[in-house]
Length: 105
Image (cartoon, rainbow, N blue to C red; front, side):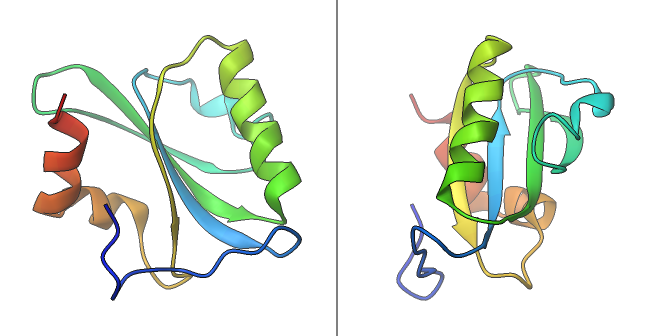
């Protein structure tokens, strides 16, 4: 999904910024449990709930911790993207290519 111009080098032990898209309306108070990520509630084009988690995680272990927390909450994960530190996950979602990717079955 990420074009070569947007590709981000991610290493196992270094921090990276992530956008995680989940099909649920997560309570904003879950931010601490989810690695301090910022939670933004919106909806998909079909009206189903979508929460965008965005933020810097210290390494892959912290990413796995966030994913395990989402699993424990029984939250369907739609997409995970590592992005450039300067990019905004919500603006990225607004781009047509990401919306199309999230609506494809």
